Length: 385
Image (tube, rainbow, N blue to C red; front, side, top):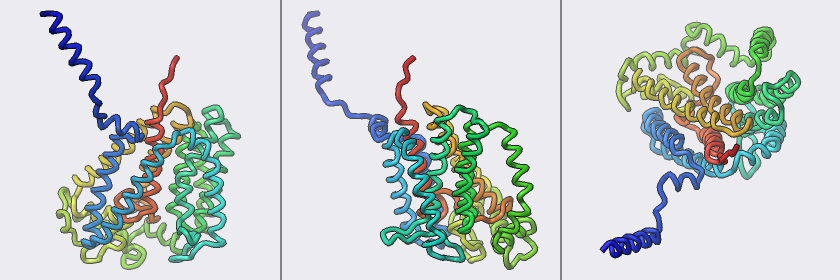
């Protein structure tokens, strides 16, 4: 009897082992180097952005469909970027930085003029902004440079890093594109900060920025000076330079705690709020969903940044940690600058609300950066003692 039971059990075990195992979702995602939690957060934010865009664009389905197509392209780029190991990005960093720098140098010579700025290169096959490429090349280049040097960096390494950061930032600023220049600058400075730069260097930079403020003021264009003056006193020209920020504050304040309801906002619908589906879409969101809706959106952004910083902590060398930390915190800078300018805490500089504002180039660039984050997390190797 016992022999029969054992034989039956063994036969069942053999049959079970012979049956093909269905791979789990986590196994499939691991094969594609896709981080589930970061991916879900980004998808949730993108879907929320499409709902907000539908209202902000005046219920324009073509606009929503166009944005959805761009987001799908961005997620495809993210998955592709996640397949390459971090070693690939470390080796490619100086080449990508060099190509980006050459393209930025070509912009003043061959770039297209639009709305008083010269930011685009038309290569017949593709028309793009080289500054978007530098958003990725900058943290890669700084992280790759500091990776080969002792950390915290010494004075000479800091000076070289500042030169790496400063040259493209200056080229972008003179296009002029102050918003993108600030993001590129932040990406490089954050990588340097995570490298362990001392507090005295931060203090020295603050003093230097304050001392150079008069010179920078003289170099600003007239419209940029108006933006700074409007930031300091929005009521000085309420129907001119101060119109955007005044209407934005009205929209945000009228939302109250719970908002007027989705599709029920009036500032954008009645065309009081300019650029309602791009730079000022946060004002539309605040008016319709109120303070609690804003808290939920902020929570989503914080969760994404937190996941990015967690991935940075799990990096296995200095390049991975500096790159991941810089990419995660640059995403936070996007959010901070956009929300800050919409509520009047910062001058208007034309930075979109990430993955919510209408715009394809910025979304694709951001998602490509998140693909690099996934690469850092999913290509980890087992370290032995």
